[in-house]
Image (cartoon, rainbow, N blue to C red):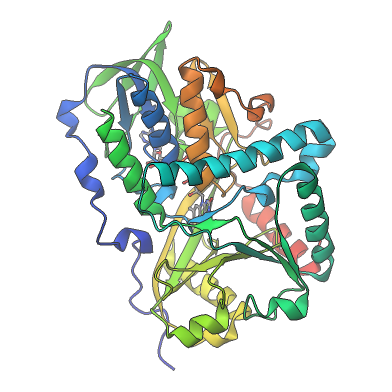
Length: 435
Ligand SMILES: Cc1cc2nc3c(=O)[nH]c(=O)nc-3n(C[C@H](O)[C@H](O)[C@H](O)COP(=O)(O)OP(=O)(O)OC[C@H]3O[C@@H](n4cnc5c(N)ncnc54)[C@H](O)[C@@H]3O)c2cc1C
């Protein structure tokens, strides 16, 4: 049999799209303005979404990104889009904060998702948005009832159409025997994240935002209300600063770094496959995931020709050879019919979890921030970016239910989650046991 892991490209599949011209949106670092109304650290979805809102409100905005544009998680994700309920740990929120707050979180999460769909359509961003629906399979017999209960609870609070499938019916949705029934969320969608990113760059630059990539902010000094940002060879001033660094938050922003758990997440993309093979795996061309704690997710490429499969990145650091093998084996466990398929792309990126599984937004030491999307941030980062900008503008629309959750750290935690491999092993074990 041929080697299915030879000559893999390490470029994220999305960034190989010939329609992209990301570097044309940056300005030469020699032209960094000495002062701005708002400086944003981090040029991913959060930073760009905030920048658009601010520039449209007449603010002079500068965005700095340490890496070439498109290097962060915003161009590395699966492009699965939904209200992210599965990442919230709704039971945990209910037991700690009560039903009323939980319901407010559910309502706003749905609003956030709908807001992004509407924004993409209104702004005419050509990013292959496809409301294809999501199949969520029960990875253990016991999880099927949990899924049904969750649908019931959600539909008591919001308009939440869902189609429930037993194990026999599920085969019409997914060509795998690995699930014990599941639920379809017809409202969920997919998109090409790098095209969304490019759309935001276009809108931001048109609105007057100046974007500088390969420009790391080494430090931000609060000078009694104004801020000085230390770049490699110069320093610049800003009235206000937003930290939008999510899974890439560095030690210079220690108070933020201590509050997030950076975790590497990875994806593979297969070679182009015959239509019959794709049909045997994902007959309805939706997006898919299970109920496992260490979750895998998959979809086709927007042209329907490849399968993109994501999950935990095995190995330390960015080791495509390791996680490509790991994810391929996982994919074949779900879909043995893919065992001879070649992998063309493998890549990874950093996401930011939080100790309470809730994303956070607000202000610490005078610095505005939004981060901690717990691996489900395509919709949330765009929404939170807009919200944090509205807050900075003093606009009442900046209020969110997420203001009400304290952004907590843990004693002795400094931002390096050394304990994560053990926790992941525990979660994998719990997945096998169906807990
Ligand atoms: C493999 C993978 C799959 C995913 N799949 C999905 C999915 O299917 N659906 C979903 O909803 N979410 C998914 N996510 C999560 C989602 O991509 C992120 O939550 C979201 O993109 C976060 O956006 P952001 O702008 O906050 O952060 P990022 O896009 O990561 O941007 C942060 C930026 O900050 C910059 N930065 C850091 N420090 C500095 C500094 N000192 N100076 C200047 N710049 C700095 C970094 O260079 C980086 O570009 C996935 C993520 C990964 C990695």
